[in-house]
Image (cartoon, rainbow, N blue to C red):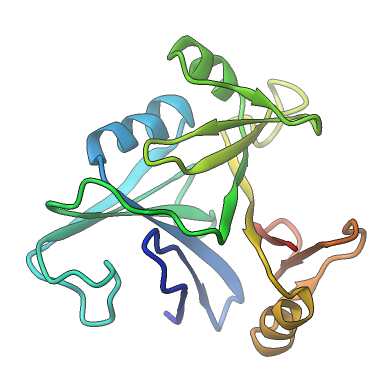
Length: 208
């Protein structure tokens, strides 16, 4: 699978297939694997889909500029074949990462997420747009929306979009739309561009 990776300390990447034209996952480097997994499963309500251990660094720098033992855990609201999921990359011996300024956060929708966050004592910050922000271990932000009703088809959870910062929306659109073939969505407010491969898939939102 092609991978498009930003060279940052808190390195995140988006991968996609050419045949299905679908964004697959987003990669987080994590320093506390136990606490992070607890947040994703107990608070966000995601499930571990698969876990792999590696004795040495990835030749393609999948785990960053590290040569030692590492692991990756795929986690999400459903199977990787038809859900946008998260990849948690853990390098043994690395307890923290300095975050860059590219990732704004991941937007998810799921019943009970904010209630579980409050019970766990996590800060829940209302955003004024119907969502609230919570933070995972390591400082990564998640913007949570509650489904309209408990019987809604995504009550079990869904990743709606990945929000990234852009210093130049014109060049950003030229890359993601013109080179990678994503469709620019209509109705974005000034200073914001939203792109996706197809309706119902996770959206990439860029904010300048």
